[in-house]
Length: 573
Image (cartoon, rainbow, N blue to C red; front, side, top):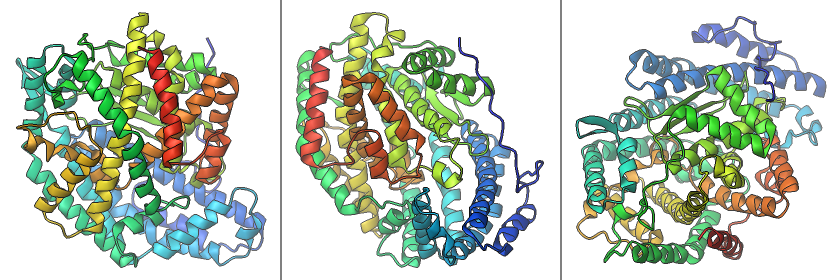
């Protein structure tokens, strides 16, 4: 067994070793030192950037721990107050002085002299940040971040009592895989009815958030918040029009495949009509796959799976386990969803998820493990801005990991028939995911292109968008009130607006990485890890090229990748 070394924080050279984030008055002097320091050469600029990175990394890691604790224990007022304090009393002071720092550097001739060493994107990001910064937006950001927490609080409190046991909706949802169709329908309706209890509150919350976000965009001189976010997120490699191209390509090349899979499912289950509660059960009406028995079992099997792929990858998870940087099991009072939170100073991230016992939980763990591997691989990068990944790059890491580990899933499914089932279900899930990504992204474009819409307008737009990309086979008769509401389960709409199209782009990239890996495992894995290690020191297109793939979402390319997936899916039948 390979020994692991617990990482230690880099020795601080700018901050005091005992520096802690407490109040702004203890932080501000460091920013002022940077603002006042003379920069008279490219060497002194390089040191200045390293010092700024050290300060920002410490602040980001402190904010990260506050967020992690709050999401792990949503009912803990101390954790919530701690996070809110950072958002309300520290973060608003950082933006204006960070803008001054950006302007200071942009006025110098030395940044251009650093080109060829990975600083091109840094300069571009600074220029963008300076262009879109508006002081009047600072209180709006604070209010937005505070209000966004409401979604996690509402969702985290959603539970059902079934046969005397209180369950989270994630835990209850496991029963949607039951071979008992009557039970599936009962559980489905219970879950949807529970969601409907908070429908108005969540509708009103989104209306509030859209208003705040639209004002941010208007203040910064943009026509809408969508255009502002494309700039703020550094989307230099594609435009909203490219997203629309993606939407249409998915409708053309993937939705017909989704319809075919739905027809096959209906036929296999011998159903007169395929209903929404029939989509999670095994298509041959077999009991649900159970890949693990507990969070600990899930972790140990995932470590072994990563070890087989490459010992370095297994050691990433072993290190996180040794440091207690994991919270895997679903429980009451925990925020929904899952994430890998980078911790910039120590370099070792934190994985959060809501595992029960399903195949999807296994995939989530491997997905977040892919993010974690990239966090480790980017530790050597000198500046925090290079480790601040765009999601197109981050999601390539995680989604590729889902696919290139599949040949080692026998650790979870020693029975060959179960292994084939697991692979088949995951590939079918990809066919389902791409249209859902297009749905959520297109819906978000509409939300912010029409910011003054009513709740009724929103419902109408949702149904029109959903019908464009959803399976035409699924029968929603008598379930319209549930269909109207299903977008509310998507955390991204509330907490990270416009962070979703990346899943589709990265899914295409991941299929291409997997195709390369199948053809040449050693070369494919090497290219993948080399791409991850770049972080965001290169453009998205350059990172994809390093991985040996294209950054392309045209219909012909999507067809090529879908044809490959269909071939692999046929091998699992």
